[in-house]
Length: 327
Image (cartoon, rainbow, N blue to C red; front, top):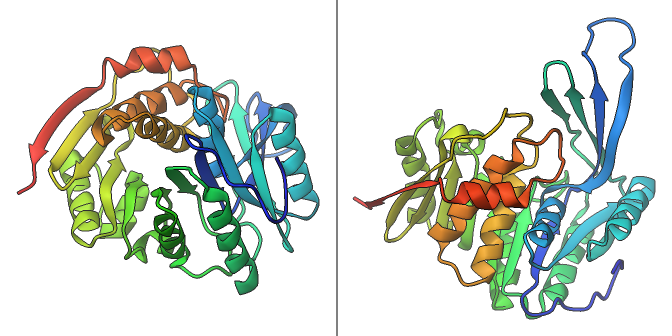
């Protein structure tokens, strides 16, 4: 479904996602990125993207159901809607005045490296921000989990996701949040699960996050300030730390059965996996273990190509788990 207003509520069991700053992702292949002259490229794919949209796509890939709520502005926004419709992703489009952004993933076939280039996106005024919250509130319906993922566009206040958390909580649902920058630092109201990567975590505590001990410092801060009931910090190739009031669980990433090609979208795929399992009734640690496996499977594909579900499920058995109580 695609609409600018008065959306119908999501059905029970569906994951509702929110993407305030979506993209049209263009993936190009180039043999070698030369410093001078023209670089001849081949278009690999063009797809709707942005945190929550990527999560919705991956939820469906894992056998769940998702409805994506997102902004859409001008010609690129119309293209975004067409791409979602063609892909069969259920979505609710909120029309805005500014133009939806386009992003580029450039994959060098010789070096097998990816370059992800993302502009900041449109500017939303206060009225548009409030309208987005109203649409989200109407769309939640009987959904038990809402995933808000991605950066905030210009114009929205840093505490916008705190307002999202209030709407979700008022509807009786749980919020899974994956964001960065001021929006993460300004979060003072509880969400159910908050995920951040090591770059976002380092920005939060003011020093590098390279180990599970570093990640524990991040998660303790998130738990003690009431920002989240469950804090998940990912540490690149090491894996992730999942923390609750009971303690900290180290989830060590499995060895990759192939070469790392691109980490674009790995975080969104992880969030999709853990949310899918939360909906199914798993506890946060078990849900996060599948998330680590899916993230590992994701980096084996170039650009933003879909991960192999069978590979992800096989890697789940190799995720190392170690629990430590909170001191």
